[in-house]
Image 1 (spheres, rainbow, N blue to C red):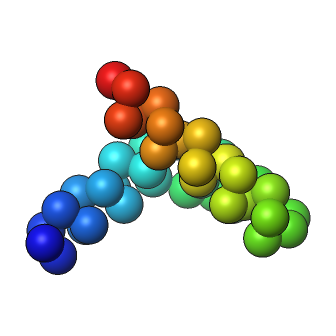
Image 2: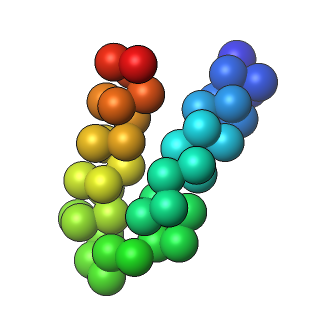
Length: 43
């Protein structure tokens, strides 16, 4: 299961906003991560 989590994080880091932490607040950052995860899930 650890491998699956690590793969998920590596895919999320492909999104520039997630990797560079553009968002200033934790709430906004979580929203961006959630959107990126949805995009990956739908793909």
